[in-house]
Image 1 (cartoon, rainbow, N blue to C red):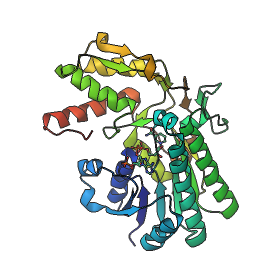
Image 2 (cartoon, rainbow, N blue to C red):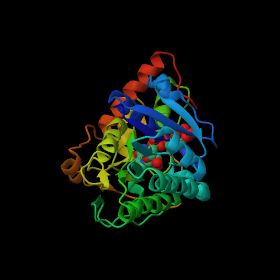
Image 3 (tube, rainbow, N blue to C red):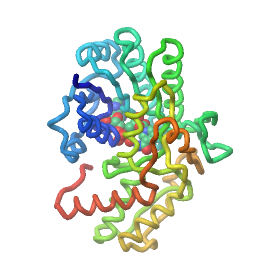
Length: 327
Ligand code: NAP
């Protein structure tokens, strides 16, 4: 029998790669577009899967609508990826972030509990939940210490998923994903800004590129690898949260230098703009990947620099084909 998966946030970076992976595995994929926003379908078109997915408009914050969709679609797996996913933006829009990132998850959990307790749910948690850790290497026992509204929203949703799993025996899990990047990163995120900027500097269409704090260090992987981990998490023997990471952190400065070098762009064009610093920032964080390797047989195939090389190669291909990415 054909398996059916429902993905919220299907228009985002992870949603698209996950949809492609599930289609490749023979799933019927239903993608949810949040009815309160205009979502570009460019990513789905770019991956060549737009005609293969069924898209439904739903008000994710309306519990009755979520119930209705669950009954109508009857998925075996729900991937709850929709979120206001920008840490920076969460400082400017804390209320939107908390509401969007917590209430939609709550609606899916509650609808599953009430109507279809056999449905498995994946929730997208984040390494941002840990804040400034004393030991930069995060283990499953590391305590949460969120320092942004985004991180607070993710901790709340994470604990809710855990509480439904414990209280109602629902197969609901959270993947605690560290940064993962791709060609499909949206405007406003570091990697996208870096790629756009390096290409513009190399063609001479801009003369400089400004960033905030480049001394922070993050654990970066490649998004298509990470969606594989999401699927594996819903197919574990026992429902368990997992850390999904590469096990190494690198500074944003090292990444900028790497991309500039590849593009033959001088770092003299780089400017640090203190107004772009976040009000609170995690200095250094990376995760211990051994648990996911042991439990899921999952491992990241690319480190930060490998991921950047792939993205750059794809961006150059797109540029030479004359296509442009959406604003
Ligand atoms: P993304 O590219 O920003 O995609 C987010 C998705 O959620 C898009 O479909 C977006 O719709 C939708 N969305 C945005 N704001 C929303 C709102 N206020 N209400 C409802 N839907 C909204 O994010 P991603 O990188 O794919 O990440 C997927 C999930 O993983 C998110 O929950 C994110 O927080 C989490 N996560 C990501 C990373 C990472 O490094 N990428 C790391 C840890 C956790 P539009 O297309 O209309 O914008």
